[in-house]
Amino acid sequence: MAITVTPMRARLSLVCTLLATVMSMTLAPARADEPGACEPGARAWIAVKFEGSGLSPEAARAIVRDLQVDLGWRAIELCLSAPAVARPPIATIAIATDDGRHVTLTVDAEAKAGEPEHVSRTSDFGAIPADGLELAVATTTDELLRLTWLELALRKAQAEQAAAEKAAIAIPALPAPPPVPRRALVVTTELGGAILAGFPSGTLSKVQPDAGAALRLGVADRSLGISAGALLAPAAILDFRAGRVQEWRLPLDLAARWLWEHGQLSGALEFGPTLAIVRLTGEGAVQVQSAHSLEWGGRIASTLVWGGPHARIWLAVSAEMVPQPSQVTLASPAAAGHSSWLWLASCLGISLRL
Image (cartoon, rainbow, N blue to C red; front, side, top):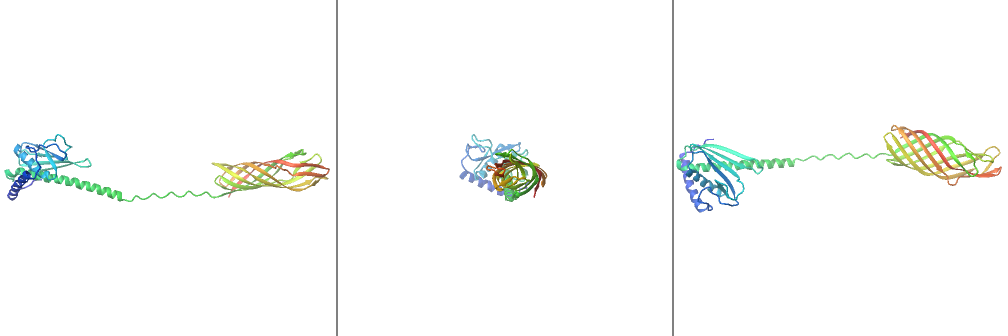
């Protein structure tokens, strides 16, 4: 960009030069005799270099001296060469001209983010008197340096504003995961056929196996539950040496359940007390005393269930132990004994999940 300087501006520049010279002699800090020779120190500094043959050494020294005055007020050194002990320059100024009229000024400043800022300008100083050229070049260089720093400040402010706007954007909170639905109580009904066999006690010789039906009702939550059931069967035959007795027996039980499940296959382990209602009847001429009684005992069972979610095949094996079986006393002919102390049952049927 070309700069046109009027005679009025040239006279003002000459007056400014005189004032700057007086102020530099009275207020500026002491420097080395040679302009651009920096003393070691901790202050920030700017490197300056001249390129081309358009400026004499005296003119270059005058430009450096004027720039040193302007920068001195900002506690910044201007150096033609790096000080003996110094940190890197905060900027580098290159002044290039081949004819002394068209001067190219280049400023390279390091931004705090590490990205260099490069600004260059070519000015026409042909209308400037010879005695005001150095001040005009120094003033234009200082202006260009200020513009460079202003650009860096604007860039920093824009970056900080963008960061603040980005931080101010409210990040929507992720929705809370839906609560895991609690598994409802599972009610099951098992119904099937059963085969029962009793083990004799006392003077019994044998108890014949018989067929019957099994019915159970269960309630479970996850892996634990309870169940109640009954076995319905025709009267068993107790074969004494003195005669035969029919034993009608209705066992009722209440059991705790531990359940497991794997795919379509599931199972349960049950254990709990039993109460059996017993009625004894003699066959033929055999008469039985104490025909009615109750038997307390315990039951353990294992079940397997396979199939779909609602109707499945049910298989169960159970054992009922009666510590004190019913006493059987025959009035005619005279004889005595006990009913079975162990009953085994196997069931096969269907399990319905309600």
